Amino acid sequence: MADFPGKVNTQTSSPQLETGPTHIMNASIDLNFIKSVPGILLLVEIVFGLLVWALISSAAYWAVPAYGWVLFVSITLWILTIVLFIMLTFDMRQNVPFVSWPLALLVFYAVACILYFTAFLANAVSVTAFIKGYHFDHMAASAFFGILVTIAYGASTAFAYMEWKGDGGNAAMTTVPV
Image (tube, rainbow, N blue to C red; front, top):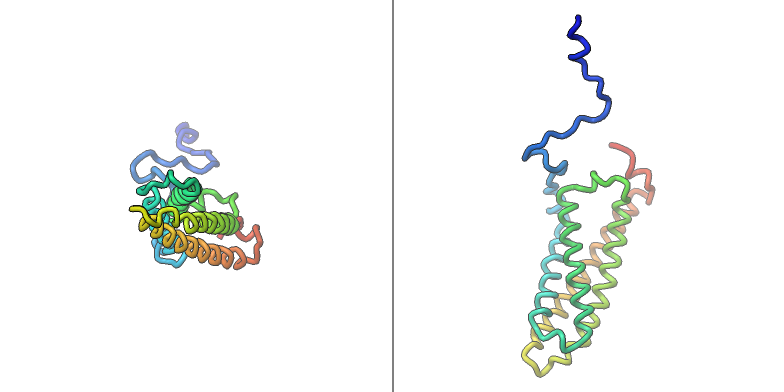
């Protein structure tokens, strides 16, 4: 009976994760997201966004100041889209429950669509500066892929809007454990 207090664990908080290769992160890969339309759209945005900024940066973009804006938008949104893809693929939304994810995704995609549309317009208008030069094909192709990325962000905005309105816009529905 003297051993009793030493054998009882009165800890009421959640147990600590063991340190090891299997418990580095509390995340799982959501393969269904990668196969879904929003997941495929994110991959399209990443690939075409890469093509936009790679084509512009491989040409003489410094000759036209508008391409600074196009590069800023395309590179910034490319990086943010990769981060978002990683977060959604590894289902990290569960680790940040205080964020209204449907609304956050809707705002991100809407802002990205608007910014990419302005970058596309700047790119398309500035292509004529390279019409007789070696880099005309690069700039024209970047404008083409720029409108494709804009369309992809627009489609993602539509899907995010449907997801946001799907629960009636009730924030309490995202905080109730299932």
